[in-house]
Picture 1 (tube, one colour):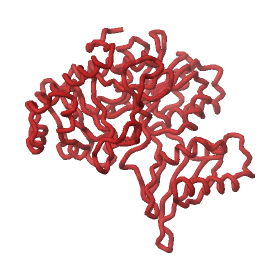
Picture 2: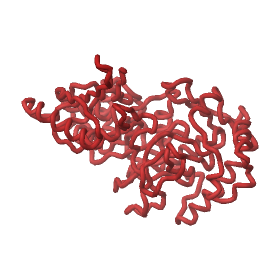
Picture 3: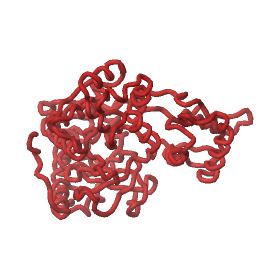
Picture 4: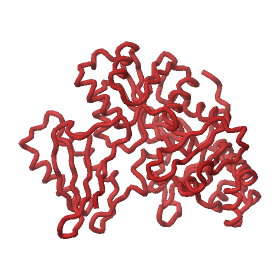
Length: 428
């Protein structure tokens, strides 16, 4: 395994010093080399000399995805083009793709962070890591392979889709780790059982992410693949990509690499910090990123910070798994609903499977309607569908303060995908 370029820290005090040093460097670097950041700081009447410690972070202006898209194709660029060795982009589903540039140091830092993730998940060089996420402009495939190679395990770069090749590799190469989206993990679990291959594969761990997931989906994935445990990994294109944090084996939140970036949790409406432990929007500021540094970048991802030292002893702070996005909320008859709230309830309902869909439309009376399609749990009695639907309708009415119609579908009756699953369909 290659030595990391950034020394490991032993105490929270050392971490605080590293963050303050990195913050001062990032602000000076961006101010001197990025016309966008210089203009934005001048508008906020702040200069690098004003940023002396971590408390001064709040003096800096926020940045957003809109800034990235308005500055297309090279927003936030803070180095000469001859130092850019790679670009990655977002999916571009809501407008122009967000293009992010990387220097060689950025790539090396990303590899080091990702190698930490594999170490935290308990991998060894003997592991064979099958990568089932997208390659190309997306950060996922390149990131997983980069981290795997830096860590020193065997990478099996299959990519998404083509289940036949995936199962050929799982059986013939006896891959021990699967890296995928939550949806792909569920699809692979169902297909493993359908093909009767549980006893012919050697998977022990799954590292999954890229989308919100329910506990039911996670349990279903682990059971279907026969793995010992799974690990949730966050991934944000703007912040290198996946590999900037991971659950440890205690599964009590995600350790994030705070020596590479600062995480704030704010109220998305007031833009003020939330109280410790309250849900809010993640805001990130990078500490070493050269080509496209982030300063108080609003990710729109919702989570909460977790206080105290993890039982594993790692000094890196933790945040909860991603609970949704501040911009994926929908309003039905005046009530704000986050899909994560539906995830949370369905995870506790034993009678349903792991997939669901929310259909929003408008009736002939011009009133909004919400239909929730859920799958019957594996082996459940179809004659219980009516009572199950009534129970879910009543519970959602009490907890979300919204009425909906529940339709119970056959087990595995809703579509699976190797990429992120779409679960809310607004037809209004």
